Image: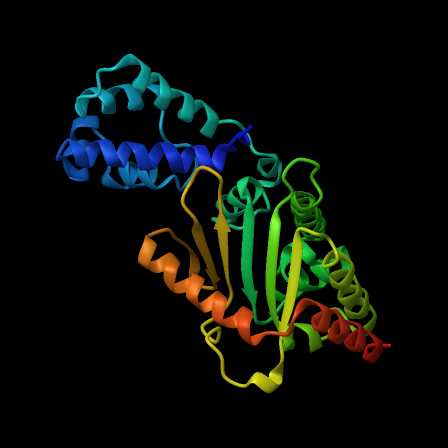
Amino acid sequence: MSRKSGPAVNRRQLGAELRRLREKAGLRSEAVARELGCSMTRISRIETGKGGAVAKPDDVRRLCALYGVTAEHQVEMLLDMLAGSQQPGWWESYGDVLPSGLEVYVGLETDALAEKAWEPLLVHGLLQTPEYARAVIESWNDHRPSDIDALVELRTQRQEVLFRTADPLELWIVLDEAAVRRPIGGASVMREQLLRVVEVSALPNVTVQVLPYAKGGHPGLGGAFSLMEFEADDPVVYVESQAGNLYLQKRPEVRRFVSTLDLLRAMALAPDDTRALLRDAAEEMR
């Protein structure tokens, strides 16, 4: 039995199908925007699935008519995708404090079958203790105390994907040794964080590797990224930076990051050796 897709995946699937139908009909997005009396930006947001559920049932019906889609079952399929995309995600209750664009990432992570990530500076959010998460959030932005509490709670709730009974997320993280050695929050907080990574990495669905300093230069010097894989959708690469968040899904782009991740995994310590390094680093934090 296949897993039920959440709103983020439904939104992307709907957008991809509408784009396919538009291209099959030989129409440019400018012409579609004129017909609907809206901006090209809105058409782009519908087709990419970004920026929230911007399509409405009437939009879908008008687009179907414009694209020559007359089969009722096909129209209903698109409307079902739309309905699925508009179901509220659990993360929406944090909308007041969630950084712009991050709701897409959390939604995709919730729906994903697997996430593989490279983290050169910090422990990945799905492995963070509340105390470490708080120290990270306090260090890079000016938040009200109540907002910090909410963001820590959000980060903790994200971790439930690792422990769900049905299809827990398959997580594979490569950490740079810098993420292990930097005492975020102080020695005590960092020690507990490292021991937490050791504990969670023992789960059958979690693999953690550390890339040692001794390896020198490596393909991950460009920065952190996450690759998310889905049951019924194409993979997505998420790249976060201070200039904004990127969601890459074109095959050549995804292949480039898959190749980088494969090289990093080959260079990193094996999981058992990683746990030994993490335990030693935790002892040094005493």
